[in-house]
Image 1 (cartoon, rainbow, N blue to C red):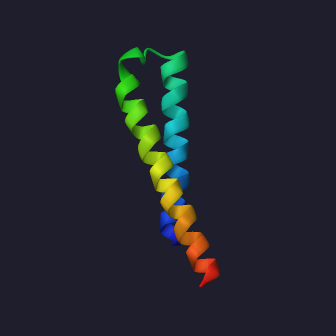
Image 2 (image 1 turned 135 degrees about the vertical axis):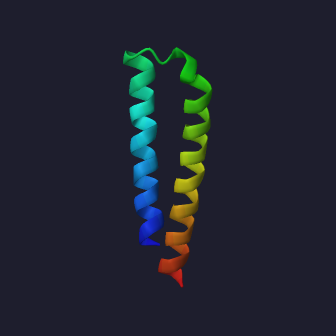
Length: 58
């Protein structure tokens, strides 16, 4: 559970860095990658939150 949480935090950081790269750097071609990374990060965080809630409940 702890590893999944750390992985989620790292994925959020990479998503933010990718967004900043697209805004301030020459990253116009990276839109599809950023979209896929954002969706994947949201799903990973959702799974992490659900598993944590189930762990607390049980």
